[in-house]
Amino acid sequence: MLIAGIVVVCIVLLVLAFVFPKLSRHPEKGVHKTLGSGGQAAGKLPGPLGRFARKPFSSGSKAAGKSAGAGRKGRGKMPG
Image 1 (tube, one colour):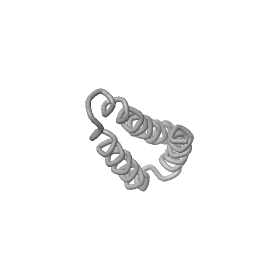
Image 2 (image 1 turned 180 degrees about the horizontal axis):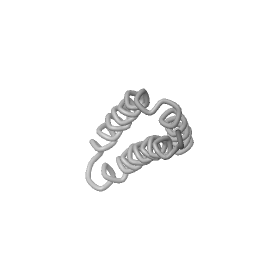
Image 3 (image 1 turned 90 degrees about the horizontal axis):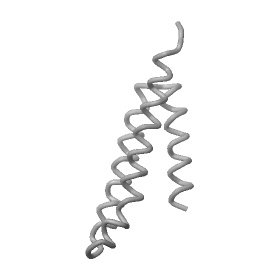
Image 4 (image 1 turned 30 degrees about the vertical axis):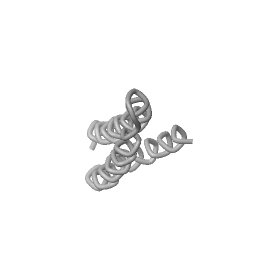
């Protein structure tokens, strides 16, 4: 379920960053903040289990950042 949610968020950020590059920064920060707090909560588990539970949140945050960056980069390459 988390994976499907991350995919949907990445697609929304990609489209938003392509259409409104400057306005896409705030939703991107919100996604990073939400996934960061989820990762912090998961990281409180003891030992290697905490690192394992935190990984999907950090990977999702990284993917969301790349997706938004790709949308802004694509918009920058548009003619005119």
